[in-house]
Length: 220
Image (cartoon, rainbow, N blue to C red; front, side, top):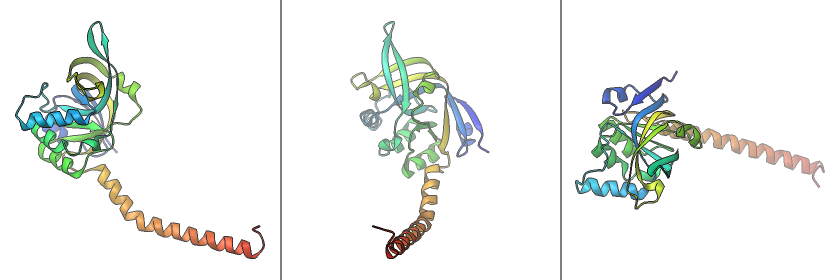
């Protein structure tokens, strides 16, 4: 049976190594969120030019979440957060994971094999968050630490949040680079020939029944 883990950032490599595929995770502490390709491009440019990132992320969490930003008493506030599709960021994430020393990446839909290998080298996991649970995630927000890159639309900004038991999320890529998404793809590929054969038999049976009905004058 899958285990349930409560992680607090920063997270050491040993704790991450103890997470297994399918385990449930609730995340607390400081996390960074963004949902934009432009923000990932900017991160890459800063890393390539050795420009300091505005918020430290070593042994921390970068989540692919969009956010609704508001102002409360003149300070930034976040009304809701919701995961976005991580695979859009596949070209950037191997470098970002490795260079920033991330321990947790999260969102929807997973990341590719190159990202999984970067996680294996770094000691990082991918957490899959169900979509459509924004009210649940909002209840985990305890503070907006900072919002960076206001020149972007709100979903693309780099936002530092404090959260308490954000989740539940599922370990979908573990620190060894094993992926639930690969398991599903392999399972589907293994069953593909059987499925096609079953469909062929169903089609042949349906065709034979239709021809038999037509011969008996049952079809007009």
